[in-house]
Image (cartoon, rainbow, N blue to C red; front, side):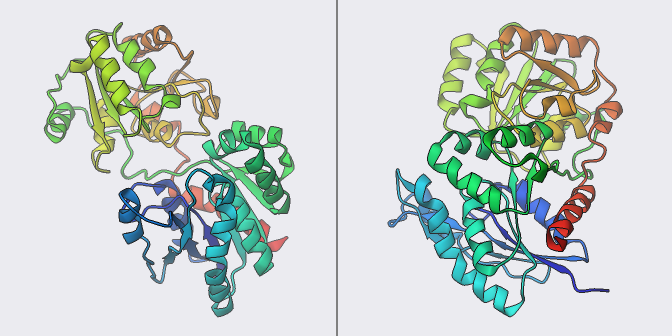
Length: 396
């Protein structure tokens, strides 16, 4: 057997001891590739810290430790994060912190290529590193990196320069690939590479006793026959949890489980009180990995009317559990919701959301049919597709 291909992956999105769920989709993707005998993966996860690390940053400083193992090493060099102006400087600061380490690793065992797992600031930083090491580069767009940073002129110019240097670009949906091309990236370079999924965890579960088990785990009374909805995502305005709460006014029998945390939580709690739905809307924060499939399987719909998405992991995980989704017409929504078994695409209005819930409650799809919508999204299939794309990068 030939020697494995060697990837150096640069990702500011990656779990660590202080933020164990931060960027898990990146770690799972790279671990799936590293599980293949024909690949060896090294991750550099730069951690940004201000000159004086206090509060949450102090915890993050303690998490900046390396993890070396035979399957996949993870290095966490620190880079200086400058408050207020860091967005402009981060690519340069990351490259400056990472390049000495990358040179040492490359000298010890040469890499075959470099990738970046987020377009900004990772992409321009990875471009500088790939150029210094004279290696081919690939960069992945995930959604917010394109839709947020791509609207800022200083970031967009750096992103386009990095895209020009890249041998290949990846997008999590066809719609995002089109958005990247509209931004000025070469469409012929962009490959659609969907997210992956742990199909052993996310699968339809038997409903007999499921509500009771979930009720015990969450310490929330859940009646067997009441309509149960969930919404999963960061509590930030663009996710649209406020619209779901307003829809609950029109669904007086329903209960809502809100999974996630973020800066919008206080406003959303106040809104639930104001609307009179607080007793039926439960803020769960982050939940254990083994609880998420229970929530999804027990729910009759996962509602997430985001204003922007690439192709949300929450969409895919809900479908895999046999739970239809109610989502806005954004990103890759139409790539998943192609029939009634997947759910409904709706206008971002409380009335439309409530009507979609009523439709699904009256005509629920078969969970097995819903799960089959993402039947090809397993991590092994994900890694196989990534192998094909990256092998082309190395061979070019």
